[in-house]
Image 1 (tube, helix red, strand yellow):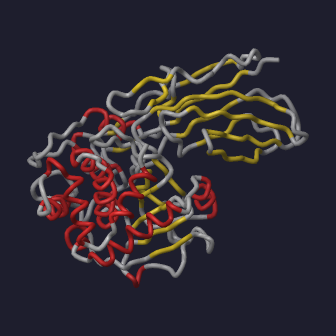
Image 2 (cartoon, rainbow, N blue to C red):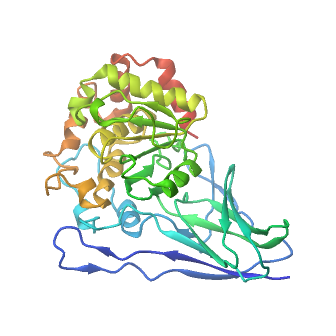
Image 3 (cartoon, rainbow, N blue to C red):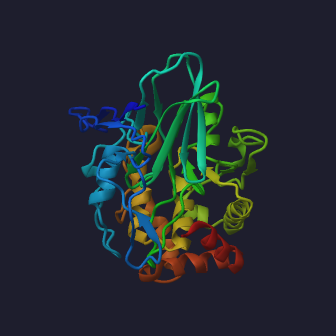
Length: 396
């Protein structure tokens, strides 16, 4: 018996950040109509191809894969390539940002649809590799929106009735540069640190370390907590000052929690080496226990951005790419991406970002940024074993 389904990419209209004069219309939704092949040959994984210099293989993503990174953010990540050692300019302002009410930091949704074939309650199980999630469906439901998806992956889904019979099943591929996440009500500016390439050809693993804005009770609701837990998050590193953090994670009492108590970000943050050491060791120990970490400050920019520089730097991601990861905070709404109405989080000589970079460059040269970060962490008291273990746990 054949079933048909449609997967559509739901993109939301974004507003140009500062001027408010121009309305930016995103590309039209991508629609794909497919029929489940009962021979079992449809939607099989594509061939794997060698990535030059990586020593690993990556799946060849089919042409009809669904974009799961916000369209504007994806365009920036695809088009911008900063040269090493040149901090004289930034390209981020060439792209529509989040603005006062923007949603540039919210990932697109994929709508899975199927033909009705049964009555009563059903459930949909979505699977990608070792990760899976079940969704309860209302009686008579024929579609489900899913989001927070990892790019360059094959997702398989199956709808089953209460008696266990299969109502519909199929698969789809995703594409994009970034695994964005959004947890309601407004845990904004959140994303996975995975997917970035290192200078020696390795890749940072997905679903290990996430960064973003705070998840206090006014910023995350029950549905958002459910989504965060579904991502596999089991640890919460709070980088805010001591007076602004709870005694435990808002995700629940079973979530590992650490709050070193940083007052400021950038160079000032790195001048508190004991707290940096505490934060780094917490991340490593959580990963050893298979507990993915979500780290954040208040808006996920200053202190969060500084800690991201350290984590990606010690893994061997190039400084220009670290800067791109840093700059995409601009796609979050104004409250999260702009301080006092000024865009000062750019790759320029006057930016806060350069305060951190210049401080780290006192330990070496931008031509070996990983060595600079390692020297800093070792001087802060982090052990070589913790650094080595972090790389082993985070790279493939």
